[in-house]
Length: 289
Ligand code: C5P
Image (cartoon, rainbow, N blue to C red; front, side, top):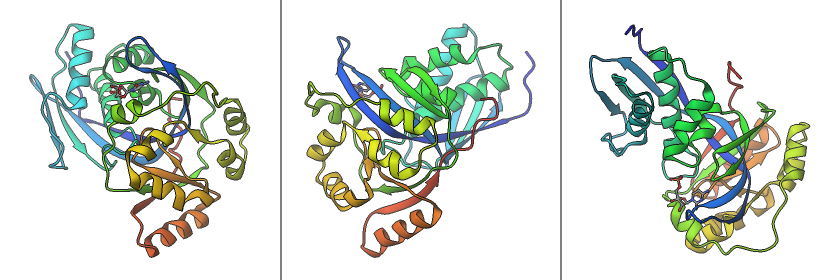
């Protein structure tokens, strides 16, 4: 089998711009309606050919590189699907904070699938990669496609929205790892649901950030606030900015009007002795999208 030179893939982080929980499912998961949006903050994966086996190294010593890492789980899931070995040496440069609701681990897994497809020149449709990705995470399929997607089901049923490259964000990163399962467990389901239509429509027609902020929503904020006082305090402090939680946290983000607004807000948070911040923007549109 011909295998070329090493390939590089960027594994972008995401923000949930809208998230409603529609109900609890028989399989223990929750039925979601969420808009996920890729941002320019990204890990970098280099996947090189190897004679046999799959190995992973990482520049962040706190990350376990054994078989329970999502990157190696992605390799093995694709090998099982194709009934063949996909030897490779993978190096991961970690930039996306972990346990932060930014999807870093899932994005690494999806980037691994994309890289293996290129490295081994696999004849595989994106839908097949998404199908494999969905076997080991609820938001992994999103990262195979990227851009902006409306995600339903557990998060794996995707409908594309026209991706926007113009949005600016301040990410506020409390030093907290939130366990998604714990936040979902603390959720009290309500009868009344927030309809995502207004957000989707505003987003798709290129509405200004102020309008998007009015329609943005995350049902998981309430259980996350109840679980972690720090999140509650942060969302209160940034209420004027209409800040939202991403996923189940711990990242709180503000959708800003422009670069100047984003930098001024980040400086204000630093001056006030707040948590670490990152100024981010929408990810560029994927070349193949
Ligand atoms: O699929 P993933 O590993 O990301 O999910 C982590 C946990 O989050 C699940 O075990 C489940 O408790 C919760 N979850 C959920 N409903 C979803 C996605 C995740 O209840 N749609």
